[in-house]
Length: 328
Image (cartoon, rainbow, N blue to C red; front, side, top):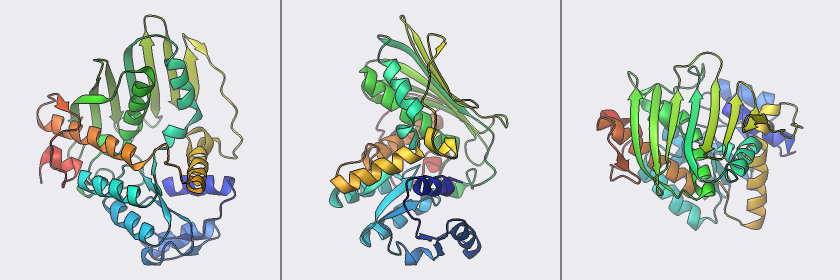
């Protein structure tokens, strides 16, 4: 599903998709036919492309990124950035050595409604409340609830609201997230996560990310102060409100509005611009690693009965987030 989103963004921008590789020849051939591209094996990438989009499972992100970088291509790495913090550390070092040719694909960082939400949040005075929810049913695609994935609702879905938390915190002057307390539920891995994130200035934000929701997704963000409330709903409807009054949003121009409204088009356009000017992407590897620092502290907290854990934590950087929670 996510590879399709990136492909549609590329098509809208007039960027040709040259080749597709997947875990099976059948899946690769199916997607390649849809995009009028050639089906190849991973070892054949980048196949002449300037950018490789890595939408494989987290355990393959590091190897696939290094492979493409060594062959001259820039890379877009889907969230979560990597399987372990050690891999995230190594990707950051690689990005610095390769002219920042890695984009961390946090699409909400480029979503117009998120930018509008943050712009309004800075106008309401000192924020005293922040809450974010991404609650939905488990996707029918992907192996998100397997141990091999490396983590569940917090590791994969939770990085979206956490990214918005961090961006809002920085914008309103709350500083960085310095501590996390987390409650996780799930059998093999977590299917429901509730977090309390503490900023440097003492403000706390609550985050709920869950695959225990209904078929209708509920993605909404809210900040409040003594002077006002700003609320954004991303799903099931796209709505921005300031003090209860709806704020008009620019109409999407893409044939499939979701690709534009959720930042996929803006993300790819920004990255191509960054590459042409040798600029560091807005959603760079350092940001992706910071998301993993927060996530891993959350899994440590869950293992320690939801105690408050500092960010960054002193956790084992060579194991997956799931292993930080449940052990090897």
